[in-house]
Image (cartoon, rainbow, N blue to C red; front, side, top):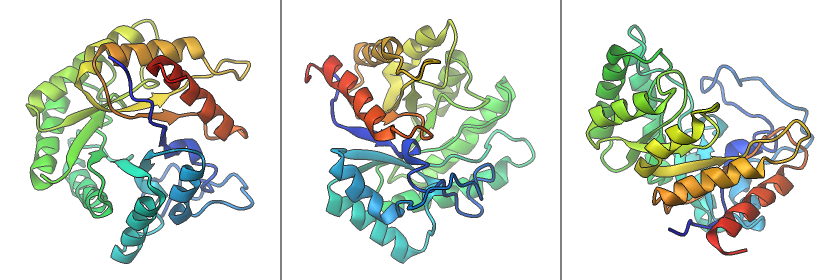
Length: 274
């Protein structure tokens, strides 16, 4: 199957471009962190900047939002519409639904952010399944919370990702999705699993993917690992994935736009659009 060559981005790649901003209460590990960017780009200006670089689709992180007021969200939604950039997926990057003590509190917190995604008009929202060690108990706890979230937000597709402690391999990912019985979708990320089983595990879950983060790896010399990237792209194509491939590159690189273009050139080549 031919893959989609739409130029798409996961805006984590532009973390530094945005001034390394994490709003209070959104992401403790990132709050207060800056990289000394002299003239950071305001989030409201980001869609037009993306369009100027040829991007037509984007995923954005919850912690990038400086406000969740209705007026601000309306303005941000309009900025994407006016720029002709689709907000493909809103990413809630914090929370632990599998935590036995705090899971219910996290479910309420994530529920609020799904509401933000709905106000922005995103068709999909990706949340964390949990950061506990994988076990039948933690997977069952996560599945119950995820199904409840999906039931409360039937106008948006809730996804999980092969990411964080609960979903460290294909077995745990497939068990969780099986327990959710179709109520929850899946986002595949090239870079979250490494090691000798990476490709085999990705091949097992790729047929379930409804979104994809096409994360590029880099060698010690700073060069993009084109062999790994092509292998992941072909794996997704073989699995029948036909949606946007949202490019992710190291946001600390000074040549981030060039690296994004390099990754997209590989996507275009695999799509037969070079």
